[in-house]
Amino acid sequence: MLNKKRNIQSVVLLEPTFGHDKKHAFGGHNEFEPLGLEYITAVLHSKGYKVNILMQMSEARDELVQKIISYNPDVVCFSVLTYNFNESIQIARKLKHIDEKIIVVFGGYHPSTDTENVVKNNNVDFVVIGEGETTVMELFDAIENSRNYESISGIAFLKNSQYFKTTKRIRIKNIDTLPFPLRNENTLKDCKIYGLMYPPPSKQVNVAVIACSRGCPFNCEFCCSNALWGKGVTYRSPHNIIKEIRAVQEGFNTNAFFFTDLTFNSSKRWVKDFCYEILNSGLNFRWYCMCTILGLDAELIRLMSQAGCRKIGFGIETLDDELSNEIKSFKRPLIEKMNEIYDLCFENEIFTKAYLMIGFPNETYNKLLEYKNKINEMRVDEIKISFYTPFPGTRAFEKYKHKLAYNDFSYFDTLNHLVIKNNSITEDEYKIIRKEIIRNFYNSELYVARIKERLTRNPALIESYDEFFNFLKLKINLYEGIINSFAFS
Image (cartoon, rainbow, N blue to C red; front, side, top):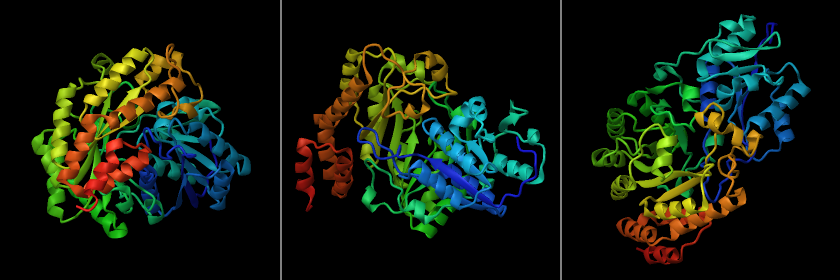
């Protein structure tokens, strides 16, 4: 633990990714700004700190370390997920080796859920648990004025070489009081919403991420949201969000936004108010959000479309009803009900995406064959299939930590590695099966018929489909003919 008073002049905020967010043909990652770090930057900047944000994309570790050192930082704060924890530790170790006076702070999902193991690493001085804006400000004040760290809620550190965790930080009740994230065009210019979207990626300009709320009303066994945000949802006012969107459009000419809320429609009343606020604002933009099937109906979907929504993602996870009841904290609707919602979205020019999982420990090859057929029954526009991954801090981790195939957190990437051992299906076999499920879905007669109908309704979506299938690197036999038939409509 630091005991001497320190003057903080230069701060680096770091998001190590080491290429994890490269586009993946069978799942894929959008490219978004580091919103959490931009919030921290905004509060630090308001107090006069000099802050630089770095995202490790293609840089090798040593190259990144030298870039960090070039800013002569007093503090380096890491945004840490489980998959990049080991990389973050390696970077912190190199920084400490070059300059042991650099103060290293870890925050984010992984440090908030596996706090003791993170703190016990000698290269980490402090862990910030949960929401970071207020905590970081109090921590910096304590460092600069040699105050007692034990009085700061929401941190952990080593005290006399022993793990010490302070009292829990109370959530920010009014998140309208936070300054808007401090963005820069150099970051936004590379940000895209990939997959099916209108406008398509090639026509998107400086895509920005907006957090309308924090937290989730549910508590599914595989999700670590509650560990970071706590239980329940806190909302921003629609008026405050519109002010941020207006500022982003004026500053960066942004034409598409991703609302990063875990369950955008957890309050139907709030969604309605927000959509009316958009319609009354005079702003013109398109947006993508994550919803639950529960709470959506024809009226709300129509209103969302009128307000510019062009894509909704749904966390379906599994089509096995028994398994769904086991891993989710609410009863998932049947496929018939899901299809009713997908059809309403289709009618209102909203693309739909289903987030699905395979890789459960008791899964069999026959179960996966059933899964393939069930997926083809879904009238959804896009699917993403990840491997079920038990992150530290979740009930799933406690349930399956004795069955892990990997002890190295770098493999907890959800797309490339099967983390839980399966006695009947190997990781390579799973990848082959996943590829076949996806090919089969996009080649199905139902899916191709929906493309034809959609392009008949709106030929302007040709580019969206063209870029989507180039992105997937999949070609459907009828697809090129469909595109050609509408190319000069």
